[in-house]
Length: 298
Ligand code: GUN
Image 1 (cartoon, protein in one colour):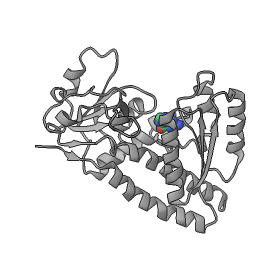
Image 2: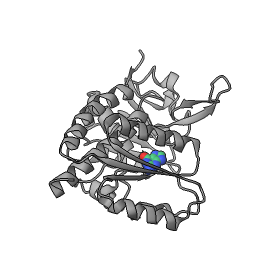
Image 3: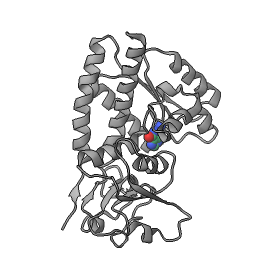
């Protein structure tokens, strides 16, 4: 039997409708949420993500401050722009699209963003607070995955979860969130990576597999147990001459075979992707709500 599709697009729409009400309330109180998105260079995938973020802001009534610089922008100039946005009271969230050109130190840039405006949840202060289960900004893709599981009625408590990949953006934080004691989580988590000796032996024991390696066809049907839940985070561009833009998108899982064995699966596109931007909107709204509370006005 074929797996139930976890429709990220529909769940994202549901959350965006909830957020729209919160934005309207903030606007009424004189505090329109504002998000700065900084893109450096012309990487096609990054351009596409940033366009999606801008559209989502417009749809929700969030002030969108979208900045696009050429790839030769200096690190010093970027740090100066971030400093300005840190001080700008109209801006509640700052996101610098990654990856950055090689001459810019990603760590320095992330640390330059004020933690209270770090809606990506990448600043060490937010990462530390997340690990300690304190109030923070949760990173968008992992938070989106939790929302997909929760809103699809998939319980994680006591389940075996295997995460493929240990990136700072997805693998490490989702592994941490799934094992947390408060709220959702309470899973028994294993992380597989390039030094794992037998990944298939791990995934075959998993009730939930999160594939986040960025390589198509990494997770095949023989690697999962019948009825497993598969969350596919991969967004891989496969050359395809029959497509107008010359490529099609594929996840990390071999969708056609895995869907016949899994109980639930996220499609690519239309699964995790729409949730990432939605959770960025949520963090921006949360940031504006916190600012409104701190100042009693904006
Ligand atoms: N590049 C790919 N994913 C992300 C993300 O979630 N945030 C930022 N800033 N850059 C990214």
